[in-house]
Length: 202
Image 1 (cartoon, rainbow, N blue to C red):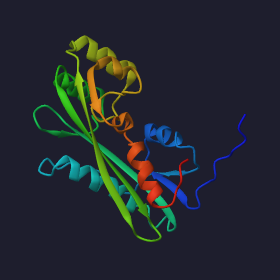
Image 2 (image 1 turned 90 degrees about the vertical axis):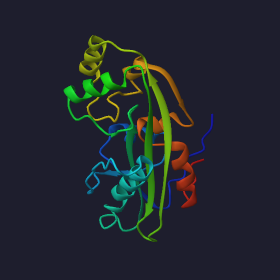
Image 3 (image 1 turned 45 degrees about the vertical axis):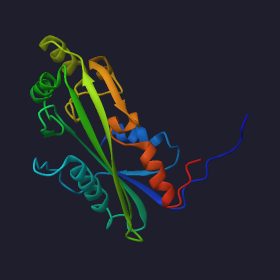
């Protein structure tokens, strides 16, 4: 039995998010961190490419907490998806919009964009990146969509599903390099970014 312990990071790490899904994901990396609600506001611009938007939104979340945490590594993340008609969409916000999103997504493929940022509030360096993940939904009936939304309440999720839960039953196919990016925090990319700032995960 190993008695080896994980050495805590020398720097404070802050997750700029109110998402319970990102909180659970970051816990997988096994180091202590704080959580704080970002002070920035989200808005979607259909005229700006989704990969640029998610990087900007992720960085705004991290930067918004710089004054509150002046000597920390602050992690921000954001997610949007592009539907089959080329529209950029975010969280539905209510049951009706969630059902409408899923009806439009049914039987089609969609690309999710997840932006990630690590901001060194002491040194001022800000690393940003994004990942993509493609999902293809099964052809779903209105009743199936209605039952799913009422059972899982995915109104706070881009795409109106929780892939880590019952949302997997909506899928026909998923393609991407890092499934955690679909949940909202790409851990593979984040690990490399943290190591750039001297945080050794292993």
